[in-house]
Length: 457
Image 1: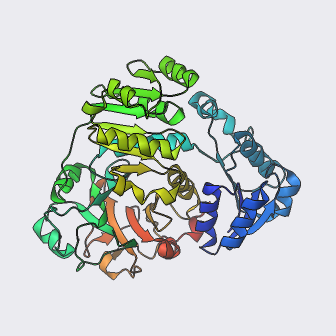
Image 2: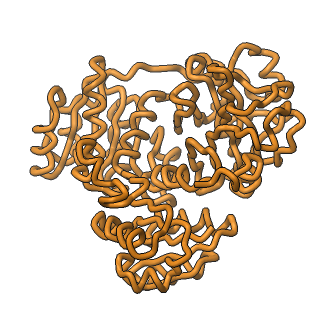
Image 3: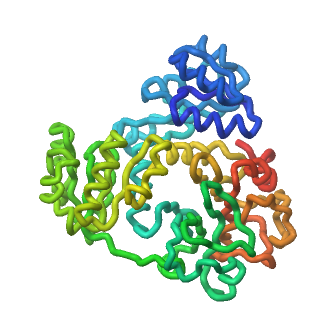
């Protein structure tokens, strides 16, 4: 597949890394020559320095025979014009644009993106993706990572194993015997910095970060089995009242049982948030101010969500809140190199906006009937939700007879209207929706097993 990626920032670079690693023909375009040079030197991609919306630049990037264009520059307008040029001049079949401004995303204006208007096939909103990720983190405070699949009927939970976990040093095979009715499967374990797909004889040790696919109704029991207590979130503080913080506050207002307060440093932004919110108290001030945090009730808060546009402010506000007695702290972190510091600082969970945006884009560029993709870690693995086609090599075969790579595990299956825990005897049928954990190197083989080529576009 030939793909043009416009914008060589972190999101564009990560998408280029994914696609070039799977032997796609990738060209990166950016008006910053340094970013283009970084991409071409670190990845197997071609690079063009210039403005992505210029037809001659797209021509040089190979737009005449491109299969897809992903417009992920920092400018919404450049991304929109790029897609228009890609459609009108070069007839590129698939066009994806990242748009930040909320006005472009209002549902009543969605008709704007019709093919005969502004021809964008997929619109990605980083702020909305991050707000959704924040709500998922708040829904499962005992987990450091949460993602929903199968129409909300299954979840991927990331759990750190503590010393007092009841199932430490227990082979995964025995967990099935001990908890036969528990619909949960450990699909990934990170140990000593390495992520791997475990086999039934592997054990869980303290300090492991486990990724578990679990049917939604069994989440509380799963957390209990792995030594985690569930807490209700009734009082939440949000540091940062910009697009992300406002979106989270609006979502929380729909949950009548939750009381939220927003702290925003910029007065104009704070006033805008106060006008948009009905039941949420907005405080104008610095989220690092100890007195202001106390005024917001940080000592009694169940959670604090730090989502300003500055990583260090988010980290320090989270640490200060924890020191003041807040039960749970979540920080928005753009710089992936800061993530290893989270546990040391006592921050319970983090949200990486680039990771959520990359996951959203991957969902639309994976071949086959892919309905959802979630990128784990530093592009180390993916969880893929996909419908099984009748032409797939896995259709009509028991799981034990399918030659999956070592880095691939099935976490859940939606079959006949029910979400079930897979076992070796279960036969996968056409029309089933399966949830697959795959290490990045094994993703192309997963796509082959999903019989991608005949169902693409």
